Amino acid sequence: MSKVVLITGASSGIGKAIAIYLLSKGFTVYGTSRSEANAAKFPFNLVALDVTKPATITSAVEKVIAKEGRLDVLINNAGKGITGAIEDTPTEEMKTNFDTNFFGPIEVMKAVLPQMRKQKSGLILNVTSIAGYMGLPFRGIYSASKGALELITEATNMEVNQFGINVVNVAPGDFATNIASGRYHTPVFENSAYKEKYAENLALMDSHVSGGMDPIVMAKKVLQIINTKNPKVHYKVGGFMEKFSIVLKRILPDKWYQKLLMNHYKL
Ligand SMILES: NC(=O)c1ccc[n+]([C@@H]2O[C@H](COP(=O)([O-])OP(=O)(O)OC[C@H]3O[C@@H](n4cnc5c(N)ncnc54)[C@H](OP(=O)(O)O)[C@@H]3O)[C@@H](O)[C@H]2O)c1
Image (tube, rainbow, N blue to C red):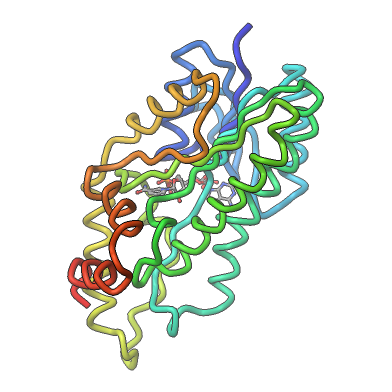
């Protein structure tokens, strides 16, 4: 019997690559998008879901369970970028980002857990970010939303292990997707105290994404995790330096570590 997988944000980038790859490996795949308008162009089942609208989450999960009778894997992938100096970023935009990157995935977990508990099995993969392991300048809100999701994953995993369910994080480094175009960019305000540094960093961030890895690398890692009997809580998928930066944060004094990051971001 093929496993039933639900992937949020499967219309583009990492989610789409995972959906197509798992489909090719014989999984029953349901991907989501906020709009069903282009459903026919995807080779997998596409259902409407907006992680900021709980009614759409319930309806999508109910549809999958009604059709398949089970739900084995949730890939909580939908997410958005946000950039800007903390002082300049509109508070409403910070909250909107947390609604998508933090509260959204939690709502989706809440929607699938009753079925997984009933089945006494299930796997939830929360797509976080290597940026969630450290506060990155001009990406503080993004780092915070992904870091917060990492911690919620740890907590939930311990709560649901008793029901045969695993909750894990998969943290990507830079991948070439549409994330930069879908990001909220705080404008480079003329009178901002951060104007030059922020403008330089915006260009640097975009070049990192466009020069990033192929999302198929994430798809292969996800398959490997699905096939692991006792998965770890944390997975990181990225270049050597991206992953090593997490190790450095653990071992270096804070001041040294921040100096390294500040040199990298020309601060
Ligand atoms: N690319 C990177 O370098 C990178 C690095 C670290 C982490 N990540 C994380 O990886 C995940 C996938 O990002 P990506 O790079 O593949 O970006 P992407 O190409 O922009 O894809 C984002 C996906 O999320 C969906 N989405 C956006 N807002 C949504 C909402 N409110 N409700 C439901 N779906 C929503 C979009 O679908 P619709 O517009 O069709 O609804 C789209 O399918 C995100 O969580 C991102 O933070 C990416």
